[in-house]
Length: 262
Ligand code: F6R
Image (cartoon, rainbow, N blue to C red):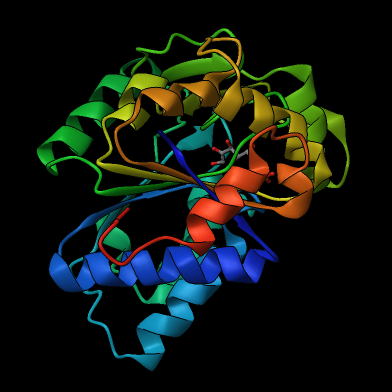
């Protein structure tokens, strides 16, 4: 079963992610991190950067693959996911930018970019730890409802809801919000060895409940996590508010024995 951890704050969630990732980097210095953009992982990236600097962890060999990129947006645009990953992950952690890839949204080559990206992930030995956010419609990466659960990296059309949700990054001007993207597929995401999904706020409560306690369906892409052998969902009280079994999840985490590893 997916492990559900209910935390008091984004900072507490960030510390759990940071501790888990730091342990991974120590065990495997050239590990491959799967990276998400958006607001959900920001506290986690900050906690990891703080830990890396405080404990002097060597990140020079760490590699990374982002989940997605807007189609046709200049990588130099401040809201491109290339820029966002550089600003929120590569620079604060001190990663080697050449070792961190983002899907190529250049329209001239985008037709092949998905296949090339999946091959690059495979050549790197696969993703060790993938961090995920979730859309209010249940999307992971930019796999909108209806996405094949077996999909590889490919071009997708963004839903109106996702474009409205992301308009805040584009001066709330819908005309500036791209309509298409290139995203790791659900099948690509499921190949990562460990998944950690973060969700905060009441706006995510319904999507979280449907993903964790609903049926597995392409109409709720995050429900695919139920098929993953090592997935953890970390939510605050507001995002957990629609979970039927939340008392059980809280008890299980509070009483987790040392010998029950995640
Ligand atoms: C971003 C991504 C998306 C976001 C999701 C939630 O790379 O893949 O799935 O994680 O849209 O976004 P936030 O965290 O901004 O609520």
